[in-house]
Image (cartoon, rainbow, N blue to C red; front, side, top):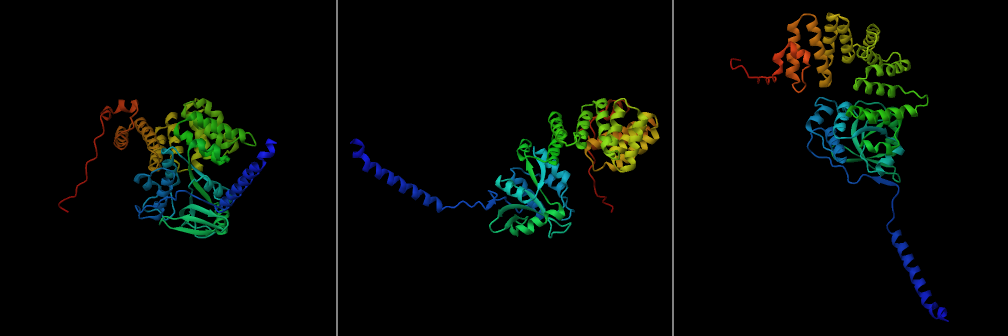
Amino acid sequence: MNCLRFRPLIQWIAGAAGILFLMGMAGCATVPSDTSRRALRPLPEVTSNHLRADRAVLEAFFRANGLRLSAADMESIIPPAARHGHMDRNALRRAAQSRQRVLMAIKADETWLWRELGHNRPLLILLPPGTTYSATAAPVIPVAWDRRAGLVELLDGNGEIQALPEREFFARREPLKHAALCLVRPGGVRRMDPTREQQLVLADFWFRKGNYRRAQAAYDAIQDASPTGTDFDALMGRGNILVRKKRYRDAIPVFRSALALDPDNPAVLNNLAYAMMNGGGELMVALRHATKANRLDPSNPLILETMGSLNLRLGDAPAAARHLELAWAHALKRSPEVQVAIMDQLVRAWLACNRTDLARQVAEHRHRSFPEYRLPRDILREFPALRKPAAPPEPRTLNPDL
């Protein structure tokens, strides 16, 4: 009886709930979720601080990743005389690395673009004017992709958005092996399901940062995933880590394994010669490896430095000085560490030639140009005056008589 008494009330509540449910469904239907469009939020900001559009979009790319580029970084990545669209990839990589980011190249295909827009990750793409090769590619940032409309929206260095048909955009990928650049935190690379090339970029990132434990783990992972069980780049990375740790003797068999995979590679020939020179290997065999590397790559300052150092160790000081002079001439655009190492060896070569005057000139130039790098003890013993801080260069003055 009690159940019958309350049945009308229960039926009324159920009916009201059904009406509310239907009203809710109707409310949801009025706000459809568009799954055919993905876009960056917020839109990257292109400032008017730069006279060049490629610099403006590069700054916007870093800002969109929460980073800032210094004026010096911008000058090195896009020099004033660089053609439009030309970027120094090594300078760009160094700028990213100094900000604890890995500069990663990914495929600019349908899968990757859709996924990265969904992750709200800004990408930088060099977009040529057509589907064939062109040296005047313009850097742009893909900001949206509307699959229903078939359009990809691209932000350029003038702050304008151009809509490009998706078929035309993706047609540029194949003939140009089109790729996009992204900035990733080192820990985020694993979540990207990286390819072998991307894993290698991460391994090299840790190597350049001096974190050899993580670099070793990354190179080992590449080696383990290799179908043949042997990967040339992973072997080179492992050998270079051993050299950095001054374990030259252990590096010799690693570089020999790499040489078996690529017998005419000048980099592995030089690295093996260097490891043998410092690890107690046969110096004449090391010289043959270095000579072959020099024949394959005659302008490489690292190979020339190895040639000079081997000749110096073998007692042929004039040949050592000749190779080290060439190494110094070809190293002017290399890092300070490379230039300093070559100049120090050149000082020793001139001393071995009994040319104290030339040795002093090189040592003084090195002391003035790179005062933050301490001179080795053996050179300071020869030139004790260089223990004092280098005098700043005198300012240039105009001749009033001209």
